[in-house]
Image (cartoon, rainbow, N blue to C red; front, side):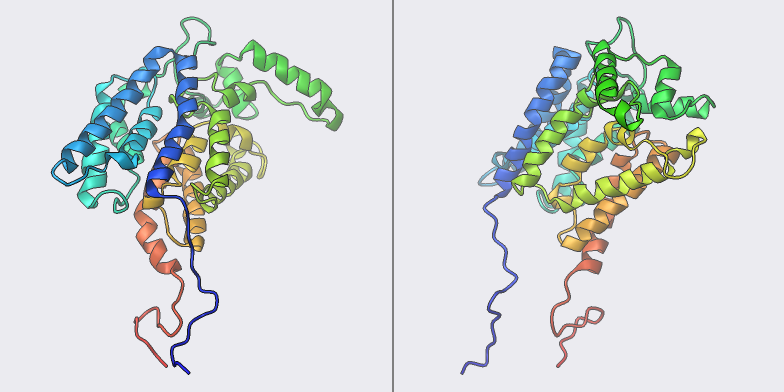
Length: 365
């Protein structure tokens, strides 16, 4: 009998998804988001997206043209440009997403060995780079088509934060928006009144106006982050097809929602577990970050338990940064912090090999 023992069912995994397929699948899921952004903000919203895609692809080509094959066909540069462009304000000068895309590919991606070796999500890192480099330009928000003529200003989350700091936050974030004079569409008012009358009145609940606008993107924000309904539909496909690991957005969502529910009511004079979870997840780019940035396989953990640690850490830090940091959204900065922690998470959560001492790495009998 052979002395070599083989397990009858080894921990083997096979996936039909290729890197090429994954990248293009995510990009295709983002195309409806791009189109919805054009519908809301006009044709001008296309230019930041195109600028970022062109900048990413040109940089990738320039840095790989000396090789036998460029890596443009894998779709990663296109996806980086799409994510970066969609994270920009609709009216941002086109040179900003272009230069940010160059930074994403040349500095974050290629200096560490290219796709699969980058230490953080290139699009996310480039977005933070742009925010630091051009803070004024990235704080000018364009109102969507359904807003009152001449209306401009800050995003709902920024308005809520400023209103609370001024001591007039109302009874919650939606109350703070109303106190600031933030407009609500007629569709939102009519639909909310109908739902309250037909459904929620029977259980003693009164849904405030404003959530429907947040859900469909009738609000100020980045080109891609405002379309909650399309982001959710796209994420369903990505998770169901196995393109994205479900553990990361699930743990991110649960941790962030728990923090928002537990502590979100305190700034408004409410008690524990009286926070507005719905507003928290529909604002500040949370859905965009949790389902499209956080699931990047190159910059996230490669162990199942590590993915849970990564998602929970991003959710907790995202809430803390949103309320106590300089970044109003909070989630992007939180995810970058967790990107840096990925090597440590992988090391601490790596499965222990039978007969191997984790600390010393020596075989023992």
